[in-house]
Length: 132
Image 1 (cartoon, rainbow, N blue to C red):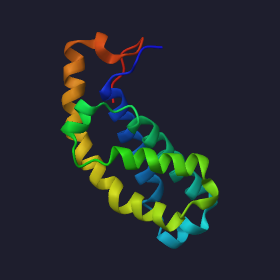
Image 2 (image 1 turned 90 degrees about the vertical axis):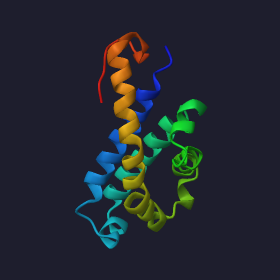
Image 3 (image 1 turned 120 degrees about the vertical axis):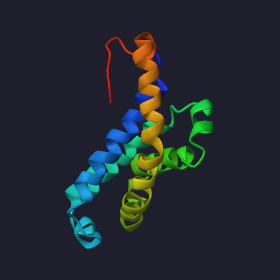
Image 4 (image 1 turned 180 degrees about the horizontal axis):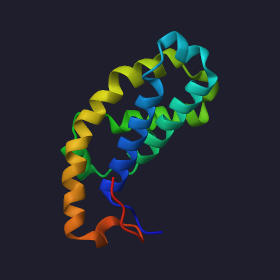
């Protein structure tokens, strides 16, 4: 399998973050903590975000210096492998406080990267053309 483009990984982060935001927008922290389904959905999205973050190159990290890609991957590892130690109140705070800021910072860079790929779709890194 060919390596995917940085735009593809950034799009994965944005998509999961937006799905997560949609899931929690109708919840309070108490509602989130009481709902196994909501907790599982949000944790799954954090795992997907962390996986994509692990593929972000240093060059892209340099463009997005404020994004804590290492912490995103670290959170993924805790959620995927040390799930008995999950602090769901912390997961909630991260989803509510940090994810919107991450979206705000990544989306403009993602748009530029997709524009570059439109000029040269062979660099998508996939067999088919995809857009965010």
